[in-house]
Image (cartoon, rainbow, N blue to C red; front, top):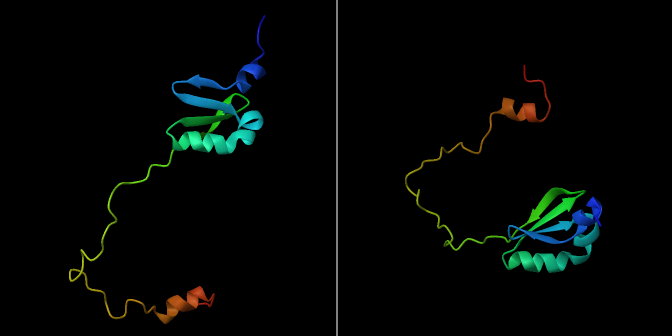
Length: 99
């Protein structure tokens, strides 16, 4: 006795350590549980009509120390008029004719 393609597509199956869920039938009801499994290291694939459409993976947090600033202190000079824009430039932003 054969099993229809739609039933096969909606079944949870384990393939290459990835879980496949039909997004319309299974994932909606089990999202919190799936997120917990992803946090634990599983990769969850969501499919729609037999086509993979999204992947839920654990967020990889960096173990790096926060970057500290100041490495360029004293090496870069900023012009005194850095924040001043020419009037013609400002007029263009205001939509004025600058020709």
